[in-house]
Image (cartoon, rainbow, N blue to C red; front, side):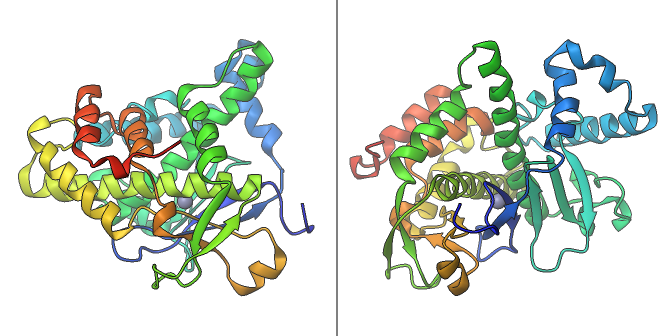
Amino acid sequence: MKTGEWRETPIYRSSFPIAVSLSIDALSVRMNHRTIRLVLLSCWVMPIFFAEAAAISQTEAGSTDRTWMSLLHDAARLQLPTKFLKAFPPDFIQFEFDDLRTYAAEYHPDEHRMILNRSLSFNAAGRTLKPLGKMTHKELEVLYHELFHAYMDYLQVVEEHSAEAGHGSEELLSFAKKQQACRYGEVKIAPIVQRMDETESRYLTQAESWEALNETWAVFIGWAIWNQLEVQHKTGKSMFQDQRQSHQWVRRLKVAFEKGDLRGYYVPEDPDERRLTRKRYLAKSSQLTLKEAGVLMKHILGFQHDFIERLEASFESSWVSVC
Ligand SMILES: [Zn+2]
C-alpha cells in the first residue's frame, strides 16, 4: 500500500463503450460491510449461519429471489449463459440503481453490490432489474460484464470458506491465479488508448494485476454476449449452443484478436501515475490469449469441449500462449 488512498480491493467501474468493447475503470474501496455480506453468504455455504438468515425480512428475501429467478429465466429464454449464474445464492448480489454519469456500471466486491444505471431498472424506477428481454444488446453486454465480476468475487468468497475447510481452489479461480502470475505481473500498456502501436512496459502490483485480469476477462464476456445477441438477432440461432453457427464465432473472435479489442485495464496504484491517468489500458500484445478465451468459453459461455479444441486448432501456432 503506497498511500492511504489505495486499498486492496478495487471497485470495478464500467465506462461507456468505446467501439465494441467496453472500457472499464476501477478505483479502490474500503473493506467495510464485508462481514455482513459474508454472514449472508455463509447461510448458503454453512448451515451454522441459518439463524442469521432468519433475520432477513421475508419480503426482502422474496423480492431478491424473484429478481434472481427472473434473471435466470430471461437469460435462458434469450439463449444467454446461465450455468455460472446458477452457482450464486439468489441473495449474493445486491442490485442497486443510480443515475451514473461517468460510468456505465460499478461492482463493489467488498459488499457484493452491483450498481447499474437506472435505465436498466424496471420502468426506470430504480427499484428492480428490468426484464432482460427489454434490454438493448449494449445493456446486456454491461450486465454480463458485471455479472462476471460478481462471479469471480463469489468464487473468492467460496474459496475463503473452502480453505478453512481444507478444500482446494475452484478450477477457474485456480487458472486465474496462474494467469495472473504468468501474464499480468509484467504487461505492455498503451499510454494513449487510440495509439495502440505506442507501448510501454509496466510491472504490476498484486492488486493491479488481479484487476487487469478481471477487467480483461470481463471485457471478453461482455464482448461475447454482444456478439451472440447480434448473431442471434440475424439468424435466430445461438453461437454458444448451435455448432452450425460456430463459423460466426471463429470469424468474430479472430477479428477481435487482430483489432486488439480484448484488452483490459487497471487503475495505477502509484499516486504519481494516477495523477497522469485514471486508468491504464493494456496494449494489444497483453490482451486476452486464446487459452484464456478457451477456458472462459468452457466455464462461463457454455461451449462444448470438442468445439473449443477445434477452435484452438484452427488458430495459427503464433496465437498459442506460453502460460
Ligand atoms: Zn469491469
